[in-house]
Amino acid sequence: MTDRLADSIMPRLVEPTSDAIAEASRLLKRGQLVVFPTETVYGLGADTTNAKAIELIYALKGRPADNPLIAHVLDDVQARRIVATWDDRCAVLSEQFWPGPLTLVVARGEVPASATAGLDTIAVRAPRHVVARALLQMFGRSISAPSANRSGRVSPTTAGHVVADFPEADELLVLDGGACEIGIESTVLELTGSTPRVLRPGAITVERLREVLGEVDAPPVTTQLASPGTSLLHYAPRTPAELVETTQLAQRLAGGAPAAVLCFEPASVKPPHVPVPMPRSAEPYAARLYDALRTADATGMSRIIIEQPPETHGPWAAIHDRLRRATGHADRDGNDQ
Ligand code: AMP
Ligand code: MG
Image 1 (cartoon, rainbow, N blue to C red):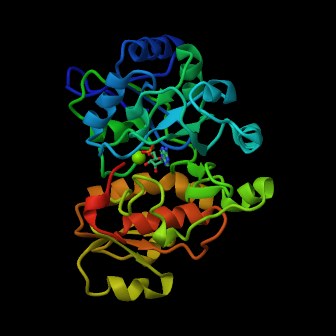
Image 2 (image 1 turned 60 degrees about the horizontal axis):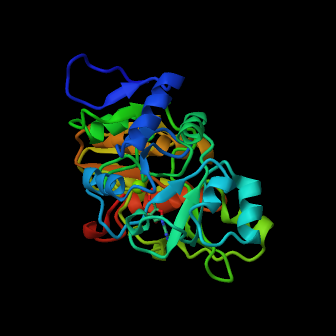
């Protein structure tokens, strides 16, 4: 939890008590924005059915108008109210993986065009975080919410990250649920064609989806631009970052400018370089990643070096996707968040 400095201008961080959740629900009903924790990252939420409220999200984030939002729902019953189709695959997937970090892209129902950036499809997900669920329950309908960061910055995994990105949004209510359990954005699965397609890898792996659905397309990480707004460099820190194999690490550090180094062996990183220790297994690595990138940014070093995790499959696939994006395999114009 993050302390609030008395009398300073900043978002209103509150413990997610039932009173605070009730207030958040009232604000949503009045067309205002609220920040709430999910198990993936923090979301900046608005009433899906309120076009003016949706506009506020784009304005506050500085998000390009062509980058669609995920509609958060309590369950498949709420989901069905905002989609045009809900086939057997959706029924099976929601049964198996909801509430959880899987977003389904299906034909759009009766929602304002701005809620989907004008697309005829809509992305829906039921988060499993208790605070998100309590808010959805109380609000009673879908909440559209992208990650609660300024466009082009790393997604927030603590309430403190949200405050860092919107220090002057003094009206913004932030339900502080502590650190997010998963720490990277949901898996996005498109179900509009005959073969389901992963548009963005996440904690629900393509291997698990294939166990349930059979054939699932998963474009290779480097060419993954199919989902609107998932241009490369989405998830980049401000400081230029580079991905380096363990065997090359010493050489890249020797003689170069001082670097903040996301690494597995902090003892191997000597001054003037600064180690930012990372866990060796995938789930804790993902949970730590965005905070580590923000920490590395804050060291003031002129470069960030990320030791490349050796594994690339299963739960590591989503991490590699974010690492590639963070290390700039594209131009800086495409970033969104
Ligand atoms: P964020 O909530 O910031 O992680 O961003 C939501 C992301 O979900 C977007 O940037 C898209 O990549 C994806 N998304 C949302 N709606 C759609 C849609 N209708 N079709 C395809 N991808 C979508
Ligand atoms: Mg985002």
